[in-house]
Length: 175
Image (cartoon, rainbow, N blue to C red; front, side):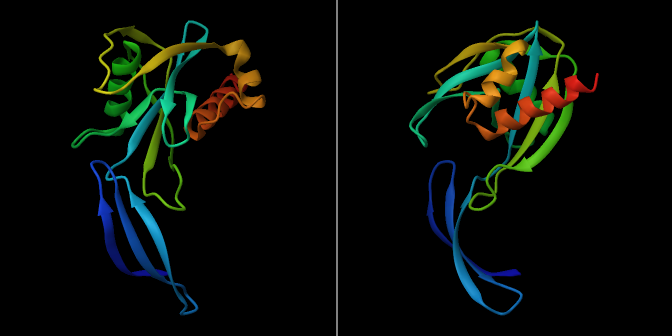
């Protein structure tokens, strides 16, 4: 397969929508609308005093309040692990002292080019919360004893968080 043409349909502050013309290996040609996020994101599973740190925030795209691991966009000239550290401090007020990359994946490759980097940490020092303009969230501590319940009862509906908690379960099961 190959992309024959990409036409910009519209551009916003953070996203650009393209119409891409793609040729399949059999010669057929089709069009797809694709969102360019204009960068990647980082997220972190933070295990803190017997809890997993989650943030609760309203997501207008799905018109719901979701529980998520701390995450955010990787800024220009920033490494993914630096973004994960920054986001955890900005949203929660703690700074991880040991950070381990556990995965990288495309968040929804059927229509968007965003790559997500997923990290884990369990040692922290105190930092300070400083939310981005317009960011409204609250910190929730999920006791590790309740992770299975949250996964099995659909209390976690965010893919990066679901994947991060599954990783945590496998990691803890192998210790």
